[in-house]
Length: 494
Image 1 (cartoon, rainbow, N blue to C red):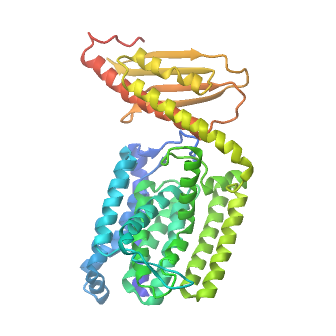
Image 2 (tube, rainbow, N blue to C red):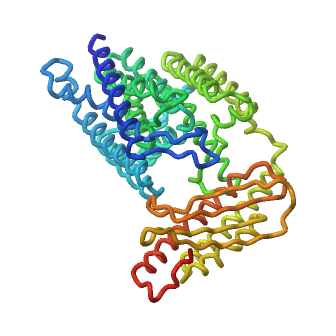
């Protein structure tokens, strides 16, 4: 136990110091998460690279074991596949997250790296070969072992990423998962797994000191994807060493909150006709705040309590017989059902409205693709505006403005396009999306509604963001052409 405590303490101290250093450097260099979307719950720019401290805090005591001539160090080094899998896979996932935090990574790149790492882990022996059945014989996966393992690893990585929406939430959820794995490993006498979990627990708590509400730093994708990776990989190892009939159910229940939230997001976006990887404000933590009128901190504490319940259920399943396992699962199912009812996920009265929203969203997505293609093919800035203008009618806005500008010879030059429509006379609801390419501001797209609405739907917000991205891409190339060949391109008017 002393070794575990020293590992935890070293990891905690490294994470504490590095989180402070990273926070200060990120603020100085402008690497912050801007509060410029309705989906954001913070109101000021916050540094988003805290995941670096989590990664370093986790690896620091483990690297020290390579230098220490002791029985524990020798035992740790003897687990070659486990060490290689966690170090190499964890580094790859952390680098992917860091790139995403700094520059933004598309879904194709993210899934490419994640599935590549998952395949490598499978080849190293991190795999699911049996599906437990608490009421009968185990089911052998056979050829389905590979796809099931890949889906588990990639799914947990992205589940932790999706749940990272409130201060301290992803770190707290991961900590409960770590606690479950530590207790199970301690009971089985698995020293190496206990060391890993002690290191990860210290790294998480060291970061949470600065991340709990009100947070002064976020973990970003670097931290959330890394935590998901480690928990997914470690869960595979702990489940394969379990002698119980519910081996794989234990990590599933232990990570029940992020898994449940991810499944709900996939179902919700499929039903509503939204892109599967679009962001929204309908996650469990968002609904706790809006439906139950909870504060930021209260919502996080409620979810901590739910995670604790999942943890106790997972531990109970590990030691229970078939009848007791059935009772635990039924009890957990009742709790989940009541929670879903309270949060409005099972409200059948909205079925008609959902169908109408789905048809509207599918049509809007089609129009946005059409507008984006026209924008990217526009030969001039006025042609870009001609491609953007139909958005006013599609979204029923009263006023649509596109402003483009750049610096030239020490002066700001720009051009403004505007269209007005008779679309109501109520108080104006305004939205402005910054147009920028590679962090270089190029202007903005402004919209105003006067039809009495109090807020924008996420689908309309997403449509505007996609159009703004297309405008930024084309405007940047046209402005660059104007600089290179001023004689061939009409200059922007001041």
